[in-house]
Image: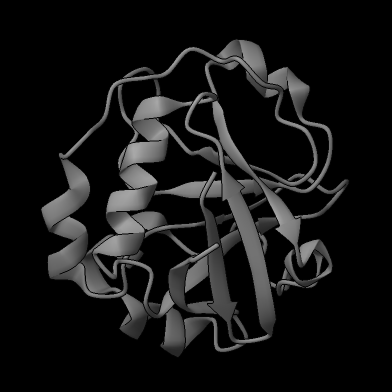
Length: 172
C-alpha cells in the first residue's frame, strides 16, 4: 500500500492509501499526487468547534487549474470503512461529485458513513501535525471565491492558514 507524505507549512504527515477501500478514490489521489496537484494547497476548512470534526483541502491555488478539474468527477465507491479519526475521505456535494477536495477526520465521524463518504486511506504518521492545523478561520473561507481567485484570495483574507507545500509518494 503506497504512502503519501504531505509536506506542510507547519510539519509533515503521511497517509497510507488503501486501494481496496475506495478504488476510484485511490486512483484519483494517486493521479493528483503524481501530477503535482498538491503544491501550495491550503487547508481552507478546519472545523474543530464545538467538537473536532474535519480538516479539508484540495482546491488548487491557481484558478485555471481548479477550473480544469471542476467537472472531472469520479464515480462513488461503496463505503467499506468507517470515517474514524485519521481517515482520509473525499468531500462531495452529493452523489457522483468527487473531484479534488479531501478531508481528514479529526474524530469518529461514523455518521458520515451512511451519507456515502468512503474513506480511502488513513494518517499513519503525523496526526499531531494534522490536529495542529490552523483552525482560526473555521469554515469562513468561501469555496467559490477560492475557485475563482485562488491563493490570492486566501492570502489576502486568511493570512494564518496552513498549507501543503507538496505531496510525494514514498518509496518502500
